[in-house]
Length: 106
Length: 106
Image (cartoon, rainbow over the protein chains, first blue to last red):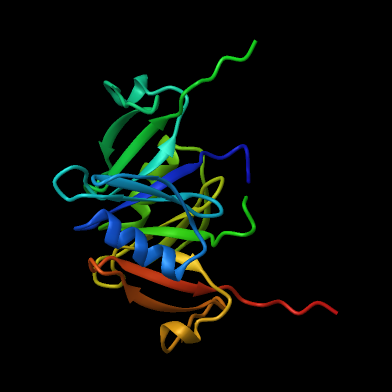
């Protein structure tokens, strides 16, 4: 992993049924379920993750990790401690700028 | 990098103009151009790559690396030594199964 470059946290694709889609990927590929409920799932691969989302909840997108979201707009704080801003590239592709939670250690 | 899991080689998004799109990503993110011509580009991030493709040449997809393509169908050999098979998941998402070139060292 090249520390000087930004990292892609996940790619998100739309599926009709989360459980069915998780099974499809688990049966074919060496991957691990990081999170799964009825509305979304995050599947961990060796180097990045695949998010499965419902069409009425999230668009197709991929997420780039950033430390500062301010340049991109107003961030939304998620329940898992991450926060993010969605932007669109020149062609309308959705790019999520994602800030991971900061854990303070003493 | 978890060696026991499969890796995602790239996520591909469609753009109208490769050079314009490459500039958009280079201006905003710490990434490196791995390959670029007028018909496609591969942009390297820390852990995986982003492919920019033209709508009439490649669909939206992401690529999972595999050592054996036979279970997935007839592979197409590309000029860069990679070979691949496109499959669709249950929801019609395009998944490229990608075999990297094998370099024999003496």
